[in-house]
Image (cartoon, rainbow, N blue to C red; front, side, top):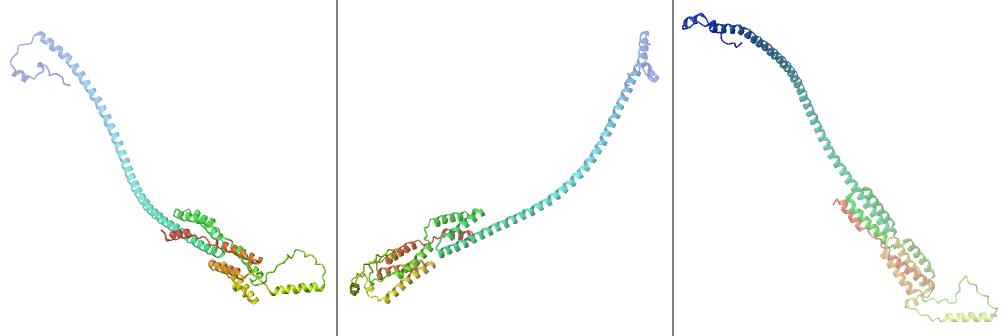
Amino acid sequence: MNSAPAPDTLQPAESLDVAPARPAPTVVEGVVHAGSSRWLLPLLTGVSGIALVSVVVLWQKVSGMQEALARQSAQTQVQAVEANAMAKQAVSLAQESAARAAVLDARLTEVALQRSQLDELMQSMSRSRDENLVVDIEAAVRLAQQQAQLTGSVEPLLAALKSAEQRIIRAAQPRLTLLQRAVARDIDRVKAAAVSDTPMLLIKLDELVRLADELQPANAPLLTGQHDKNVAIPPKAAVSWWQTGLEVFLGEAKNLVRVSQIQSPEAALLSPGQAFFLKENFKLKLLNARLGLLARQIESARADLTDAERMLKKYFQANARPTQASAALLQQVQVQMRALQIPRVDETLAVLATAAAGR
């Protein structure tokens, strides 16, 4: 298409008139120009065909590219529509999720509030349970201590302390650890305490009251030559009546004058009637000591036993068997009564008071 300009022979005539006169071509130049014109037309035709084919091919390529672009544009539009729809759906889902999250946050706040209230309620119930446990243990221990004081036995106190220890272990509360240790120490202290048996002391006091009727006043004649009732007395040989009367007379004569050693002058002046009341007063002292022991008035009982011992040594025969037996039994009672002091559980009660106060 970009062909070379036509030769000078193809120029218009107007230009020929204007141009200066040229010399006529020679034969050789004419041959050359004729050959060029003959090859130039096919060349131009081939170039034009090639250009036309190229244009067609390029046009087809451009058309394919346009179609591909159109398809891609259509696909892009479809994808854009789908993306827009998905974006709207995502926005709606996000809004719905936000709403659900807000609802969940509200419910979580309510659950947290309810949990805090439940924790406070449980702590309150736990404190109330612990306080009730402390109050029950304190009441049981005090009652057991009173029973121990009244009965003279440590068994009620020991049973109450063991029961309190088991209840504390079942509760498993750290704030009751000090109470558990105090109870354990008091249990060991009560077990180690030597306490006399009150029923046995009462039996010995009753035996002393029974022996009081067999006591002989210090100014009474000392009976000698008495044999045991279980020992058989050999039969005496037959004697005459005057020998028997002589023995009776001599025995009565010996009773008219009696020499004995009396430690207390008051005992020598006792009449038979006063001796009876002396025994009764001795019995009253023993009975008062028995009542004092039952009432847990240990000091009063000890004072009565001391008075009874003083009366026994002052007004009754010291060498007589009932007096010696009474003195030995009375001494045993006094010794055992010294061990009647019930051990106290002050440490447990102090810890209970502290726990009840909430400190």
